[in-house]
Length: 404
Ligand SMILES: Nc1nc2c(ncn2[C@@H]2O[C@H](COP(=O)(O)OP(=O)(O)OP(=O)(O)O)[C@@H](O)[C@H]2O)c(=O)[nH]1
Ligand SMILES: [Zn+2]
Image (cartoon, rainbow, N blue to C red; front, side):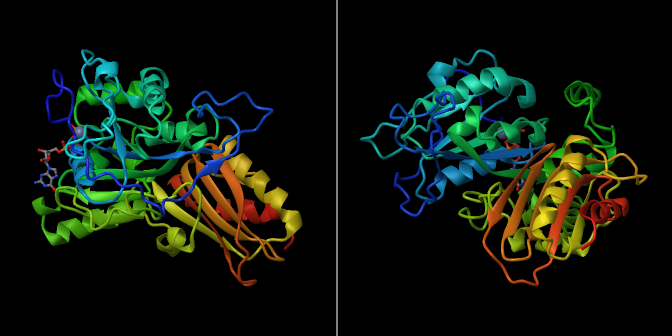
């Protein structure tokens, strides 16, 4: 963080407060059999409207805080609470949790929670959860949360905290992950691994299950729904294109935008209200349709395309997903190199009318039914990760489905 916020309450300036009447009504009903959700509103008969959270991640100094400040000063009609981590221990969480004064419009402090030092993968589970729960007690005073994570955070560990429908996910839903990269340095970080020795050691402690070729930059890019290639002013156009191409080869699903000072051309639908973990649109899978590339040694995007499946093959599809995501194996007797799946999205039409929408982050996945579609729609499953371009994926998948 740039600003020294250690002895003063942070004042990130709010824009004029307006409720957006067109905001999506994310609702979830309280199931009477379940324990009452810890963070729900007091009236349990009312459906709980979940608050969207956007995770802003990116390497040290990439421009995350610059983006947050930009968002907070732009017109978007939202009351945004900001959660920052990487602050000193001296910060008193209670003191920092400033909530807007309903009567004053100008220079309203935004609900604000600093997280403890260190990797959010670990810290979010204790201090972070407490801070967010604290924040959620102020429900109604904000309608959006932005979470800036430390430069070393692995979004794959954070995302499930908000994506799943229990715990924090009962009142918050993950809207999307925005990753900032520093245009000038990102290729170097992707090629060389971590900055210095200390970085490398911290990383190794936090991510012992990953191979050394996978840098934090890889993890942040592979999980991103949007990648901002920031500091575009520092390199020429040709080099900038190379950066975009490399990122596209790692993550074929993310929207990629070059920026200077994190100034994105639009917020709504691009940074905010992405709904990246609910819907799976054609557009999401469009860029990935060109197959996979070998530009990056560690992480690639790969697309499996096949015809609509039959109703009796849905269970087989599920078996395939379970096996690749839970067991890191391909079903059937196929030889394959070890692989690791970070992100998965799919649109699979079922003959007779429905469309299965598949979402996965690491070993967690979710299948929903989407709108009926054209009968000749082809199915697409896009995988982002290590080793996902192997032909054995398709062979194993077709064998698992059985005769079509
Ligand atoms: N030249 C240039 N500088 C930028 C740009 N965007 C941000 N900066 C500067 O880069 C520095 C780091 O920006 P921050 O927004 O603090 O980056 P961050 O990702 O929040 O940094 P950490 O929280 O330390 O990880 C600041 O001095 C910014 O003013 C850009 O597009 N071009
Ligand atoms: Zn910052």
